[in-house]
Image 1: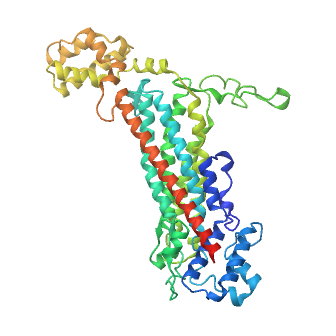
Image 2 (image 1 turned 45 degrees about the vertical axis):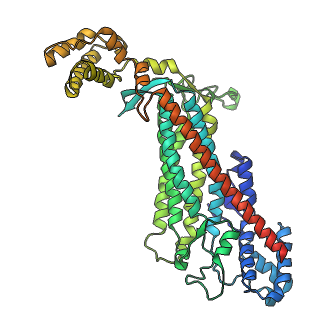
Image 3 (image 1 turned 180 degrees about the vertical axis):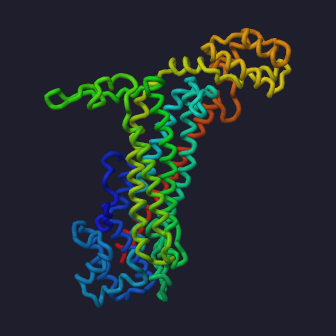
Length: 501
């Protein structure tokens, strides 16, 4: 997709799918950002007395006219204020406004920053949806899996927090990416700066930027910020894709843990229009009822694959090219813009999707009670109460589980006789564990309530983590609101100073 920077088209495309007060404020502060970027440079030139003072009033009047005429052809065009002022008052008076700067400065960064800031708003709602669902299922017992086999019991809430946490960590790199897209390149000259008495920090303040790309050759060779951003989003989509796969599997008929109520078409088209009724398949009428295909979950994995490709594109763009102002630098925006769009497309759907999942708690608990996923707790009982070392306990329980499985005995009906048999064969005696103790040790509900170690699956510990993650998320939002407020204050300062000339 070709990015039209002058008309700000990089920032449109998906905003109709996600809008709130914060995104509208972000849109407002980036409105005509090309124009305001150039005004910031003009104000600095004026304050540094680089623009002759005798021309300032006329130039400022022309700039204010253009500010008030948002439909003018120069209203959001690169160097538009210079072209407009020269047209209004002549080259001799207005031909000073591009001194000390080169053409591409800040174009890519400000365009990407606009999109990224709105994506960062969406991440808050996405994480909130995950936390809210986790809070509803602190005691919803389910099997935990390693290598697609039952491993140890867990809760659905604990599982969801295990998704929240890596995303929370990745959001720190996304915030770093915001800083990388808010560094001032202006004033680099072509690569060596300028002999003019410019003030680059003043421009940074006017634009609400986070700092300076200080070395002037670095400013025209800048690629690492774009790579950081694309890699951060690819990392995030990798986590989302794993969540999507689990939800996909657990929604199948065979598992029956989850069901998405809205997956079935509510208003099927009639037969005469080629409708397929309430089936989700054009060919197979049996594709209906529970265990439906949930396309957003599959599409998330598509998005993750596409983001991986964009990482390669972003990295390759800066490979085997001179470390300076090269044509490749103008295309770092391509992968960054698409990465933001794809991440939004494949992630924002979960904000509405997650609350619609029907969680079949009984089915989850039933499956947790069939496998021997509490075997580690049984081992702990043998070690702590019956004078059996951990390796020997592992051997006894391993043989006990194998024979129970061979005889199709679920863990909720485990045989003490089989357990005692393998105890006698291994250590020459029964351990002394009772039927009641065996049942309790193999009970997944007992398991989750006893595993209270930090980060463990107990509802109390999961609730503690949940509260902490809510607090972290609110801190993330507060930081983002502060960024928006900083940009609004910077815009107000530009307006005030422009009006004062």
